[in-house]
Amino acid sequence: MSALPLTERRRIAGLHRWEDRQDSAIGWRLLHQLAGERDVTVRRGANGRPCSDSPVDVSLSHQGGWIAAVASGTGRIGIDVETLREVAPSLAQRCLSAAELAWLKGAQPGVPRSLRFSRLWTAKEAYLKATGVGLAADPREISIDHTGDEPRLLGLGAGCWRFSSWTPAPGVCVAVCVECEP
Image (tube, rainbow, N blue to C red; front, side, top):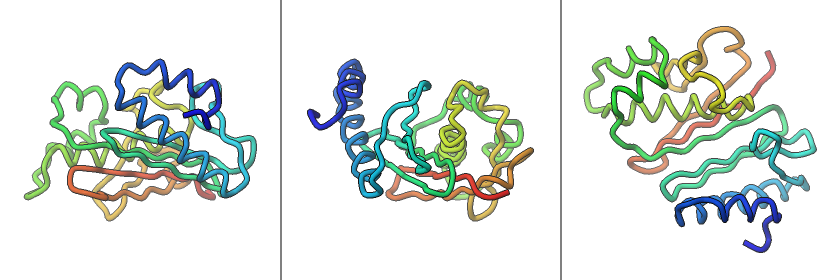
C-alpha cells in the first residue's frame, strides 16, 4: 500500500471491513497502473471520483472480491461491477424507474430476478459514475432499457452515451458507460 498516495492510504485505512480495504487498495493500484500506461496521474476529485488532469478519464469499481478499472481518451467513462444477491422489493422501488420495474417484473424464463436487477443497476451506476453525479442523483430519474443486446439510456441526452454489459463469471455483472459524440 506504500505505493499509493498518502490521502488514498488514509481513506482506505478508514474503511471498516478488511475486504473493502483490500479491494480498494488493489483497485486503486490497478487504476494507477492503467493510467500510467498512458502517462497520466490519477487523483480523487472533490466528489471522491477518480480523475486525472489530462483528457483521459478513469473509473473504478469493486465489490465482493471483483475489481474493475477503465480509462478513456475519448470521453467520460464509468464502470460498475456487482455480485448477484437477492433484491428486496423495497430496494428496487428506491432504485429503479417505472419502466425498469416493469422490465424487472416481466417474465424471462431462465433469467433470475437478481440477474435482471444487477444488469439494470450496473448500467445505471456506470452512467452515474461517468457523469460524475454518482448517487447524489435520484436513480429513479434515470431509466435504462435492457431489452436489446446492450443497455441503452432512455430520455434526453440518451444518444450521447454508449453501454457495454457482460457477465465475466456466474453471479457477476459488469457494465461500462462511455460518453460519445452526439
